[in-house]
Image 1 (spheres, rainbow, N blue to C red):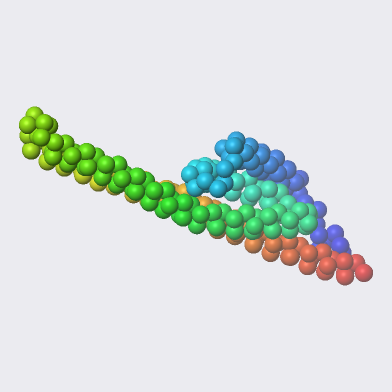
Image 2: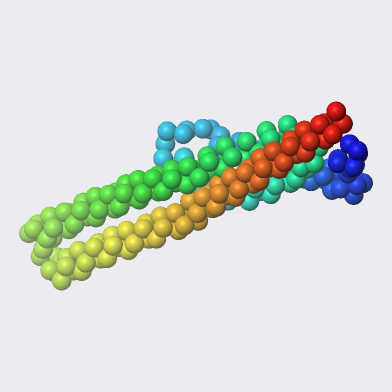
Amino acid sequence: MANLSNPLPKPYDVLSQRLALTIGCLCLIGFLIDILVIGFPPNPLAPQWRLNFLQQVAERSLLLLIGTVLLIYSQLENRLQSLKTLSIACLAIGLLLGLSSLLVIQDTLTLQEQAIATINTQAAELRNRIEQGQEDAALSQQISPEAFSEALQTVDSQAASLIQETQTGAMKTLISSAGNLLLMGVGLLSIGRLGLLQSLSLSQKRRFSLRQVG
């Protein structure tokens, strides 16, 4: 009766699970090695380091997702405790990635403000130098007023162009990095939830089988 309620896995099922275990472990090991190399030397208090690090994590997050899916698949049938542990780890990592997307947004906006402030400061310094040169009697005799006006316009246009490029780059970072981290976080949360449901289902089947045997 117990054999009917818990049939032995087919040979190809065992082979596919072992293959999934091997490939999943390789994917996760490769992901961890990349992250360790990228994060060295660590400087988590610096917004620039955090942003660069999380951007690299986002670019490699698909490897993490694939490795996790394969690893959980390899434990679906008979390893209840391993499945439960992996599912909980998935939920934790998924939540961490989701929160990391918020950190990417915060650091991107902070660095954008700093870059714009630097551009405005440098542009203001150049304007002051041009205006001082315009007021200098010796220079004003050698350089026409139109040249000073053109120089001021050039400074303003270049500053506006740099600010626009900074804002565009920040927007691309938000969409790419924060979006990937959020999507992978949701994906891992979903996978962890499915794994927990499967572990509960297996636990109930085993209890039912034990009752029948008893």
